[in-house]
Length: 235
Image (tube, rainbow, N blue to C red):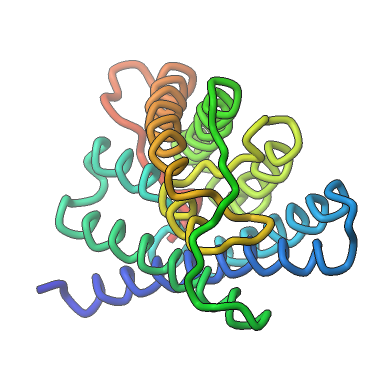
């Protein structure tokens, strides 16, 4: 049974991930409703995501570290800064939150609560895009921890995600929970359920690469692990 403080942290992860996915899905729906130009829809989607992510990291970082991402949590476990039991709670909350966020977005726009996406994504190019996007994210998160600049997390983490929207072939999902949630909406931001596994595998590979590079670049000599894997270190 989690303690009251752990329960608060787990709820923070559920809430943050739900609001993040609601933003991703909802802004995608709004973007396509306002314009038939896919480029304009992507700009709207990316802009809303960047703004919401920065606000959510600032808001919930002091509570849970604002992971909102199972691979960030997994790296925290590997670095022995988060126990397995609490991490399991985090990851469960992240997946539940992602599905909840997609459901809320669907309902806001008058769609069914759950509709499997028909947007097939995948292939070597898009999988490589997910490796690059996730590796960059974990490199930034690790660097923030090691250099004790976690207060900059609400700026640099969204900045990376926003940039990766446009320079990666996959448009930067970089998050297994978000990927699962986006499979429940047949809209602009959706991903077909059969495409989820390939994206998640690529994200896990990318997370491992990013975490290793962060250690190589920023860990003091003799330090076995990064001090913190979350973007909100000063908590």
